[in-house]
Image (cartoon, rainbow, N blue to C red):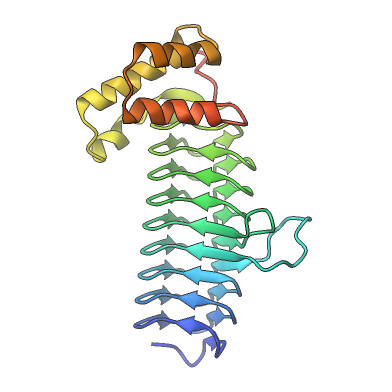
Length: 260
């Protein structure tokens, strides 16, 4: 159902069974998949590519021009996956020439007043808490949770199954499976509750925990810790994901707790 009080460009590509409420604005060069609900006073600008079964709440702005002084009007897009919820007053900017697109994956929840800047890649099943600000070209992997009021620096990587405390200032890369908090932020353990909810076994959880003890509590530098983990732990998915993330980090990983 499309309200007659909504403004919908005739060339917008709107799927089946889409509800568009009064005073929503849908511009040209927009694609909206089936079974979406676009709430009142939502603005969906050119370059938006929205999957099916999404909800976009009042005041949200999708595919706004990037807040990047290098942006020169190039064509770019903002992609929203399937079954993703965008709450009130969220802003998601489209990409720049750097990557050409900003991507939010499937089954995500982007809570009210959050911002996702140009060229970010937010993967599947991610939760971004209220009023969190995600700067340009940040990568957030599957099942990560960034709690409310967090600030994430440009180019930072947040790996999968991570839990970040509300109000955190994130300027270093966050390795997989970890629980991050305190001020300044530090490794506080592994995300045991999240891993259990996602059916990790006791053996997998113990292995992950033991690897991080080696990384953070044995007095090793990063190079020594990588060598020790490769030597002392047999290759497996969890070990290899942790090692690959640390080895490919360009900003460096978050520090260990001063209490360790």
